[in-house]
Amino acid sequence: MAASRIVEWVGGLRENVRDRLRADSAFWRRIMRAGVEHGPEVWVRYSPPVWGLGFWAILPDKRRIVRNNLRRVLGERPALQEEREVAAVFSNYASCLTEAMLLDGRRYAMASLPRGVERYQACAAKGRGVIIVTAHTAGWEFAGSVMRSVHPGEVWVVMQRERDEHARAIQDRARERAGVKVAHIGDSAFDALPLLHALRRNAVVAMQLDRVPPGMRFRTAHLPGGTWRIPEGPLTLAAVSGAPLLPIFTRRLDFMQYEAEVMEPIEISRKPSPEQLDRAAQQMANAMRAFIERHPTQWFHFVDESNAT
Image 1 (cartoon, rainbow, N blue to C red):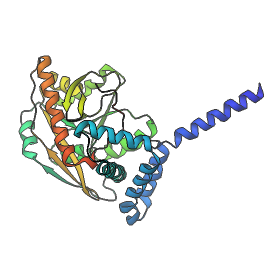
Image 2 (cartoon, rainbow, N blue to C red):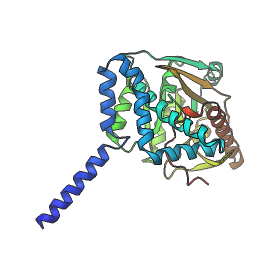
Image 3 (cartoon, rainbow, N blue to C red):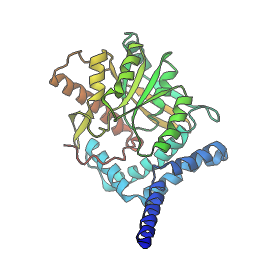
Image 4 (spheres, one colour):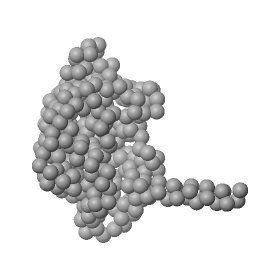
């Protein structure tokens, strides 16, 4: 009996250590935050890409997922080109994750360059709020902060809950210090109610379109590499609230410098037909593909989408 308990304890300890050392764990986030807050500037600026390439080297499954997702959106391309792009994705992601911890501006200020801001202003002038649809592109977390520079009201960022709640809390605190409210979805059908109330106050709500949480309804869009699932949540929220859908995608230019590209808005009716929903989903997918085609190394999609139909 004692021996079995020891074996069970050792197994639990091993699993706990393995969990803490996962790439998305709070352990690594805390190390990064310590380096960001107290490390020398040269370390903060130039070490993240090296860490990113290190994770690229030791995570073959993630390399495969990134490559496959790029293929599903862009189609297959020369193998050497794909591998260079995948390595650059890891490098860019490490830089963006580091800089996301600096959102509060206590050490460095973020410079943002919104392109097409007049499209946002035209949508906001309608007074029904604006639903930003974006993707996991470089600096997507900054989309809310960029909007804070041109939007006087509330800015919300909608996220799926991370596996490690402690890692999530580290990122959320940085976002909230930057004046951006965070809404986590996935646990209840009532998660979206605060967003609906916020839109009625003419708020900005940023939602992602490149990932479908488990159990969420979706529409199917067609892309050069096959089909892609687009979450139905933004479409439903737009129909209920009357707010326009505004595709905005961000990319990293340099250290703490980001550009947000505002694309053409998408309107849907209050009682859309299935065909209207499919058309709007395809428009969102086309906007995402156009951006990724121009900037493939700035799309951070590390989730296996092989079950997409």
